[in-house]
Length: 237
Image (cartoon, rainbow, N blue to C red; front, side, top):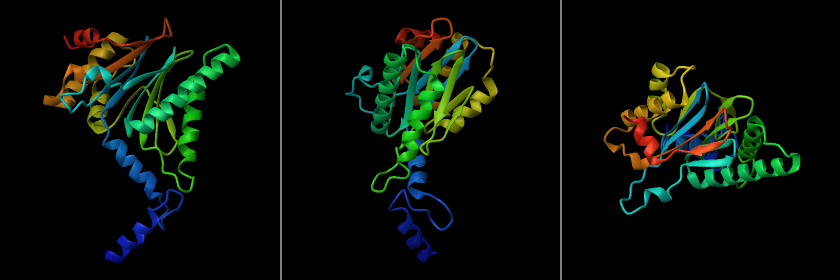
């Protein structure tokens, strides 16, 4: 057993080196980083798409409003991340630039799928560069074009579209609740109530309205709306 451990350690020094059993160990370590990040979920509803995230403010001296977990990418796109948020910030800022460049160049909002593909191409490239590590973050992208979209981007550069999804440390528990409660024909209002109750159940005694960040994009307006504290509180009633 000991020689095998030493052998495997030699293959986790670089993200560009495959282990004998065909694994990229640095990429797998990055996935574990995401699992340790704070929880976030996304829902596609009949009249739009919704994002909710736990800020996980652990220091009582931190001002909760200074911690941002849900970001606006463009008028019609939002995102939240789990894992190394410093990595997520770089990718989100890159997404904002791509979206604005497209709007200036073509005088129309960027397609959500195209934007997600660009960010995932960047993620994938960092699994191949020597001397660089993979981005240790998973990002949920929510947006509106012809219909609501919700994408999960993996540390590997893979992206998939979902009706409902969760990332972070409690993703398994949240998914289990979503499988029981999610309905495709539910409204954003119902989706928000369900999402808040799920986070409250999963976080348990650690749940605090100050820790929750959220946003929605309605099909009617196609406009990113950051949820206020009052709107979040109302959803719990």
